Image (tube, rainbow, N blue to C red; front, top):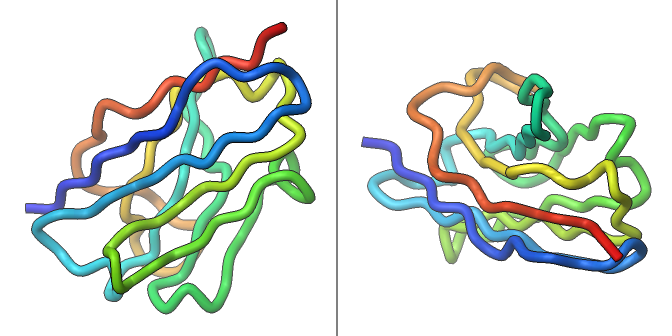
Length: 121
C-alpha cells in the first residue's frame, strides 16, 4: 500500500522560506513520479510541482517558477519541496502524491493529511 507523509509546514512571514518533506513507506519512490499539490480554502487542489522517478526532470506551475524547487532523494525515499520568497497566496495545505505516467500527471492513491503552510505577517 502506497503511503506518503507530509511534514515541515508552519507559519512563515512573507518573503520567508520553508522546506517540506514527503516521506514514503511501503513502496520505493525510485519507480514513481511524485507531485506536490496544494489546496487553499475554498479552492480546488492544484499541482504545484512534479518530479520524475529518477529525479532528472521536473515540471512547475507558473506560481512556483523561480521560487519553489523540488528535490528527490531516493536514498532516503523522500521528496522535498523547498519554498522561498513565500507570498500570502501560497497559504494552503500541501500534499504529495504519486502521479500516473510522466509529469505533470494525475495523482493516484489516497491523500495523506497534508501539511499546513500559512504565510502571514
